[in-house]
Structure formats: C-alpha cells, structure tokens
Length: 209
Image (cartoon, rainbow, N blue to C red):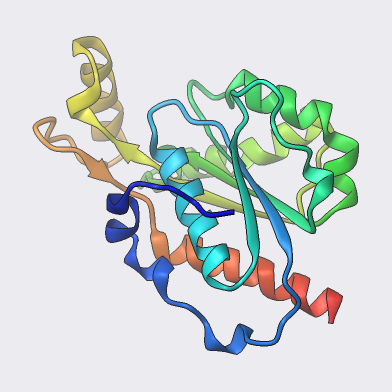
C-alpha cells in the first residue's frame, strides 16, 4: 500500500527516509499501522512509521481507529498501534478497537506507541505517570503488546482556543516545558521512534528467519 502522507511530514522527519540496505533479501511482510489522533501529531507519527516500514520493503495498511470498519489486524504479520493521552485517557474509539480485537492482537506481534506531553516533562513524577498509561490500558483491555514506546507529542499553541492555550501554558511552565505561546513546539524524538520501529522489525525478522 502506498502511503499518501503530506510531504512536510517526512521533511521534518527526514531520518525515516533512510533505507537500510541490510534488509535486502528479507521476507516481505505486511503490517497494520493503526492510530487515533486528536490534534494531528499522532497521525503524523503513524504516517512516518508507515513510510519507514515501506522503505524497508514491507507492505503497510495505515488506518484511523476513528473510522467505521477499521482494519482487521489478523490479516498481516504484525501491527503497530499509536494513540495519544489526553486528560489521562486514550481516545475512546482507540480503546474500543483494542477491546474488540484483543484476542487477535495478542496472537500476532504488536507494538504500541503512546504519545503524551508528560513524557517530555522535567518532573520525574509526571514522567512516571506517563509511563504507566500503557500498563493501565493493558489492564483495561487485556491487550499485551510486545513492545511499548512512550513518545512526546507536540504543543500547538497556535491551534488552541484562549482557555486551552492558557491551561497548557501553565502546565508546561510547571513541568519545565516551552511557554512562548507565539510558537508551536514539536517534542517528538524522531530518532527514538525510528529506532523503536527498527528494533520491532528486526525482532520479527529474527523470529521468522
């Protein structure tokens, strides 16, 4: 499947375009990359992940958990799911998807990218809370992903209304984050995301070798 993501996504995350020549000759696999997004950063991360997997020679189905009739994860060799944390919860459509497909997800190799602002905090208690969200999701749904990455999202002050901008600025100040509301801040560490995806793919290739 060809991913028709905006060029700007990959311009900002150009590291994802680096094709690994060591993958030559490996078995071609099919992956589901499923996401739920609220402000758009999780979609951007999922699109970059899908593009990188394609660059290694594998097939990808990229889909939004908010869409009716989201993809069956059991039709591929593995899946990477991405979801943001807002007000201490993942989006309901994402949680419903995981609950509905739990048995299938647990039967195939899966990875989870959990996106939050708290993981970028200078406050260790905030970071610890962010790291616990995936475990809470697992307890709630019964899904046990093979690997988990806690990933920072973005502060998009320009897109917020007055109250939300004021609230997030206060939170950012308390956590040592950026507070100049005239700018937007992308806090995602693309190197960590790429490494996470590569490690997941390499482990699968080892299992199937």
